[in-house]
Image 1 (cartoon, rainbow, N blue to C red):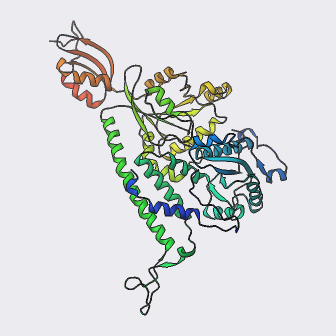
Image 2 (image 1 turned 180 degrees about the vertical axis):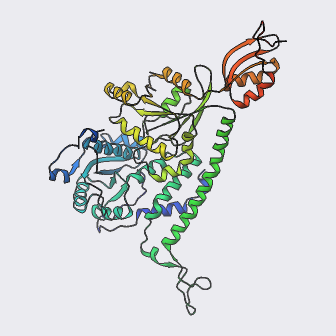
Image 3 (image 1 turned 135 degrees about the vertical axis):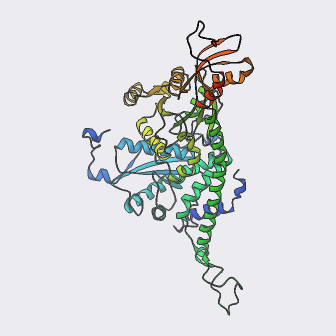
Length: 511
C-alpha cells in the first residue's frame, strides 16, 4: 500500500502531520495536464457466550508475512506491516471472516504484509472509535506485539472515527475505501482512468481535511488601516489555509469532471456508430479477479493483461467478435466490482460503466472456486442497479470450473436458471457459451428478399455482417438474398426487393 498516509510520532503519541492533508497537498501540487439464505429457515447464526461475543476474535490464515526476503523484489513496493480489523454486525461468523479475508487480499494487492486480523462483534460500529474504546486499546496492544505500522479497517470510517482510533492505536489507520482507492491509483494506466481515480480520491478526502498550526491562521486578512501588514486588498477576515485547500480541491474536481465528460464523448460516438450499423454489444461484468479478462481473451484472443490480482483491469477494452453462425458483435471487458465498492468510485467510473448499461447482453462472470459466490453475485448486481443496467439481459458465467467444488457449482446452477459453467483457462464450456450468446443477442426483425446486383457487393457484405441470412442463391442478374435485417438496411435493400408472387421460379424476379 503506497504511503498515502503519514505515521505518528510514537515517542509522543501525537500526530506529526495529518495524512489527509499530506495527500491533499500532493494532489494540489499535481500537474493535471499530465493526467493523460439462513434467517428464512429460522437459523440465527452461531451462538456465543456474552464474553465471547464481545471479545476480539482472531481470524486465522490471513498472514502474508514473507518467508523469503527476496520476495520483496517481486512486489516492487515498500511493504507496510498491517493488522486488519472488522466489525461483524450481521450474518454468520463465516461471512465475517470471508469479508476480512477479502480485505487481506486487497491489502496484499496494495503491497502490504498482513500480520494479523481480528473481528469485533457489535450491533453497530462504535461512533467514536469504530470498535469501541476498550477494544481499541486491545488492538493497540496487538499492533505493538506484532510490530505493525498500519491498521486497516473493513469498512468506511467517518473522519471522527479515523482520528479517534489513530489517537488510541498510535499508528496510521486506513479504511476499506482508502485502500481500494490506493489500488486503483496504482493500476490506472490510461489518461481517463487516472482522471477518474483522482476525482474519486478528492471526493473522499475533501470532508477529511483537517488543519493544524499555520493551517488554522487567516490568509490575506486581519490588517487594519494603520497596520504595516499586507497592504491593499489584504485587509478583512480572509480565509484559513484549510479553506483555501478545500477551495482549490473543488476547482480541480470541477476541472477533472470536465475532462472526463470530454473523454466520454469519444466513447459515446463509438457506441452510436455501432448502433447505427446495428452491431450488437456484449459486456463482461463481475467481481474483481473472477476471470473476466481471461474470458475475453478466450473468446476473442484479445491479449488483454491477465493477472491474479484484484482490480488488474481498470480501463474498458472493447473487441470485435463473431458468433459461430457468423454474426458480428462487440464484447467489452469492464472494471471489476467488489463488496462495498466506494460510492466515490461508482460515481467517478460511471462513464466507463456505461458500457454495461448500454450493452445488449451482460455476461456476469462469477468465481466458481470462491467459498461464497452468491455474495459476489449480490454485490455485482447492486452495482449494476446503481448504474441503471438492471434491464439488460444477463447470463451468469460460472468461471474457474476446473478449480471449483462440484457441490458449489450444483448449488449455483439450481439457484441461477440462466447460468453456464466454464473454465477460461482450459476452455471447458466455451463453445456452449458462444452458442448461448448467439441465441441471446437481439435479432433483426424485418424479413427481406432482394436480388442484389453483383456491382453492390457492399450491400451483400453488410447483410452478412449485420443481418441474419436465411437463404442465398447466385443468379445471372445478381445475388438473391433472403434475410432478416434492421430497418435502415431494409430501406437500402428496398430498391432491389423481389416481388413475392407465384411464378414458375420463385427465386428470381417474375416478369
